Image 1 (tube, helix red, strand yellow):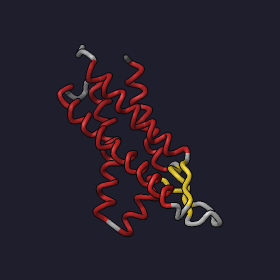
Image 2 (tube, helix red, strand yellow; image 1 turned 45 degrees about the vertical axis):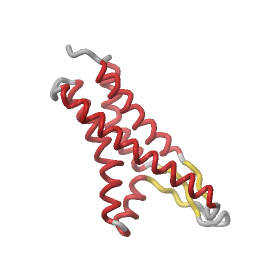
Image 3 (cartoon, one colour; image 1 turned 30 degrees about the horizontal axis):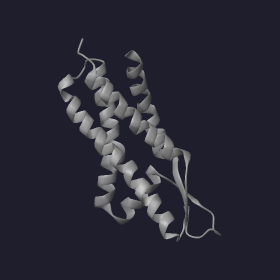
Length: 146
C-alpha cells in the first residue's frame, strides 16, 4: 500500500493549489462579468465582514484537512502512533463539511435566481483532495500494523 503514502504526500501540494483555484464564478446579473471565487478569496472577504465565521471556515477548509494529511503521513511513515487514526478521521469529516456548505450555497443562489453562478475546476480539485484523503484514512485504518 505504498502508493497511498505517495498519494497522501501529493495532497500536501494539491491542497494549496485547490485553495487558490477558482471554486466558482459568480455575478449579480447575467449582463455583468463573473468574478472568480476561491477558498482564499472567500476567506479574505469573510475576514473583512465576520471574523468568527472566518475562523471557523479557516479551521474546516485549511487547517483540518492539512493537519489530517500531515498526521496520516506521520502514521504511514511510522513517526506517529496508529492510535491517532480516529482523531485524524474526525478531522477529515470536519474538512468535508466545507465542501457540503459550498454545494448548499451554489444550490441556494441558483434556486433564488438573483445572480448567476458557475462551478469552476477548483471545486472539483478541492472535493477530490478531500475525498482522496478520506479514502486514504479508510485504507490506513483497515491496514494491519507492521
